[in-house]
Image 1: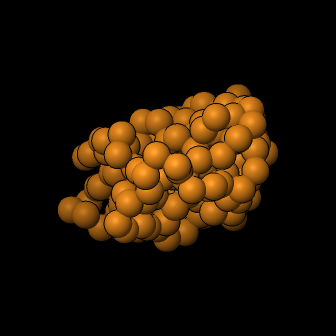
Image 2: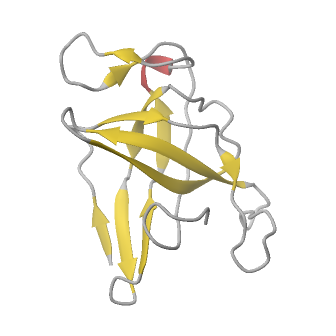
Image 3: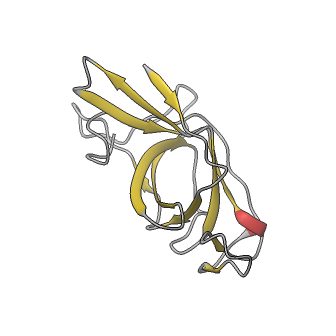
Length: 137
């Protein structure tokens, strides 16, 4: 089962450089059917009063995502299978806010969400298998 998440009131900040996802069984780097690397992306999700770190996989290089960068997470969802024993976060894209390319700064408009500045964009499907917030894919 997949539960879409309304991100309109959330702020997101990249917490660490994206890393290559590894296949759980073989421990080899995961790749898509067309040979693109699958990257693990970690972000801090904030609502102005609380926060949590989430991670998910995105296909393709994600070098434009750097720690401290304020981003928008598109298509965020939480998935569950096997009566809740297997859980994962997924997203379709992570896009820098205002073309962010450096550390985030506080939003002057008071939403609690960070803001940043510079250019870039990303896209693709994402999925993280395993318990929420655990493992690398």
